[in-house]
Image (tube, rainbow, N blue to C red; front, side):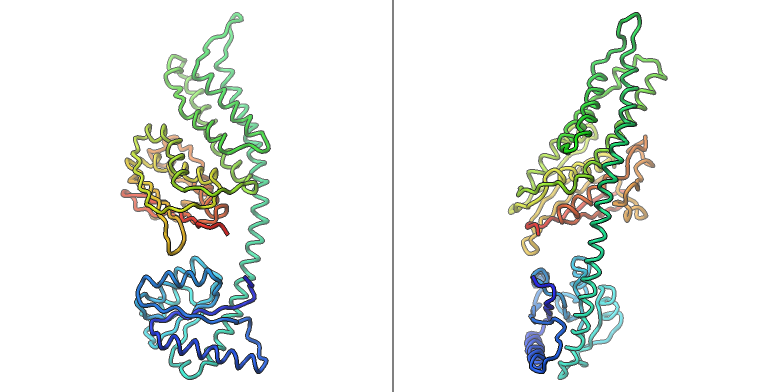
Length: 441
């Protein structure tokens, strides 16, 4: 697709007017070409007739095809401002105009301004004066090029910053490993106390715990460590209950072992997240059935779900398509959302997956009936190091890292080119929604 070519889409519910405007614009374009005038890159016009709400999807398809200026009638079976609100969110580079024969601020102009339009055009001003409309489109073409250049600059900046963060994450992970290894050594020293040349306090589960920690750190030190392998080790660690084996110990020693164990698990969680982030440029993508990845993540989290007494309800619709994704990163995303439901005292977690044929997207929804998220916190759900879990009974030790949802959003949006967002009402539900493209661009 040639980014220098401007394509104009006119959306209208009046078929006769739609044809008249498109024909008039083509005539003006031909006239300007004959006169050798600058068309500012405008090369093509097309239209969408809106008869019912179902026609709305056709607008988005055209934008996907490369239409970058939209002329939108306001009063149709679907409000023009509603369509433009979605366009602003999903296609911020697209320049939109609203056309209307009315001038009621509350009904027409204000909703359009909120929808992020570039300008408002009265139909009376362009009737029988298509050249005036073409002049407005020239302004839109200039604005489109400005937005494209701005986005290109921001993307370039983000790429440089992301590269830096990956190196930073790898470095932090290495230093955390050093400190965690010291904690591990302290734990091991407590277990293997010797008296008269004999070992005392050798506990089977604690030995397993230490062995798994050693394995975790050993894998972490490998340059090409696999996230899947780390997940499997962490899953084994969380299945070990040290409580029964350390009950017979002195109270101060028992407290010390518990504190060190919790600190080690906390550091382990941070390090694993950082390692995931530091390897984002080394990922392979595969065509996978989405529900297979969901089933695998639910199966891996079975112990955690059972311990938290969370019932999982699967609701997979027919026709779910294959998506080209990185399975390892998506499994990390699913596991973090499942853990979130467990920590927020949910009784039921419904996992739904459906295919939106019109938009060619797969939508995955995790909805739990836990405590929900307060209004003042909802906008910070994906902010790194922001957490409210330490304030709640769900995590009394306050050990949450505040990275989980930030990492999840990064993996969905930056790596798998999808979208992750959250909806919640305190005391009722929390809903994490993932939208994934069927085809990876």
